[in-house]
Length: 359
Image (cartoon, rainbow, N blue to C red; front, side, top):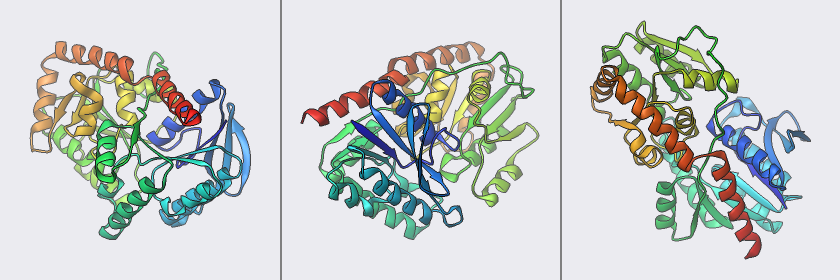
């Protein structure tokens, strides 16, 4: 059975959590005996391979995002639908083209991957179009999947159709003895995220500045908006260190593992891969108090609100209670092992594919 996984920028992962999940899932499915293809942004059409995964190279015009991303997904749908049995697409920006695989009698699985229309980076018109695109995607797909129970319940209730829960999972971290970036173990708090408004980087910087800790706040990630990045730099005090985007897995895993506290401010996605990776690294996690983060972290994390002083108070309390940090680290890794391993994600997807095949 040939499966196409579409909707990401491609593998190897070099952009965000989406791509990390796609790489982990596609390689895992190949090990299980499936023939897997992943769409990858390119300058022209071609087929290549990466560690056993077929790569569908599809052209994209980087200067015209996000319109070019919709066209890229549409071309990926057309490309994949000619020779793949199942098309699994993440996101729904190109949902008006979902008729393509259906015309060719392919099974189309859609994973909306969160509430895109809630993202603050989009204007009012874009949000309205995304709401329509979501409705078209859910109603036109052969099957609908969600990586979060909260998203699954929302979609099932709103659109009155069955939605399969397919939890994400991440690989065990690959940790070196040090991060090689002059970061001593337990000397810093950490954020790993794209620098976008809905990830609340500005809020976390402001709250860290209110805290009394002498430790650093290390931020890994970059932004498509120069204005937003400049705002973050202006908010930061001398304790905040921006490292930019890092895609070397061993280096990034090591930075995570050696951090004292991990801060997570995502609020509109479903299951966020960076939160899973922090649990897998055994971090003491302090996350924004939204249903998606509580679903993933459970009792293994502490939660802050957007109220002024909420995060700062938690940070000050943790820095004076090292035993609590040790307890959170242990609970985080246990949470990862019980629910969000790479093996669990691949097994869930395989069971779902088998149920489709047997239907």
